[in-house]
Amino acid sequence: MKRVYLAGPPFADAYRSRAADLVRRRGFAPVDPMRRDFRGRTEGHEREIVEGDLADIDSCDVVLAAFTQPDEGTAMEAWYAHTRGTPVIAYTGDALPHPWTIFVAASTHEQLEDAVDAL
Image 1 (tube, rainbow, N blue to C red):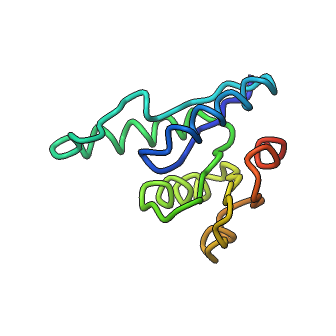
Image 2 (cartoon, one colour):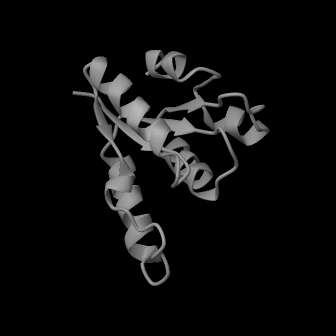
């Protein structure tokens, strides 16, 4: 079963829920790094957070990245996946895609449903 890493800003709970549902409907397994929720207590846990995210990305076939707002973590996750040869599918919403997003993404989509279809 294809595993899909759900990259996105830490407080994008609606995106994560909707993306996970759409991914499951297509027969894929969503991997949500926020299951290790460090919101409000990241200090002192940086290594654990990053190493967990990297291991999750390494275990996935594709990254679905929400670039609906600027977020350093999402950008780093997408860059890491790109350098490892893992395809990145970008969901942009109403945001104009940044040149780096276009560079690392196999495709970019304004609608989440279209991004999931591209998986």
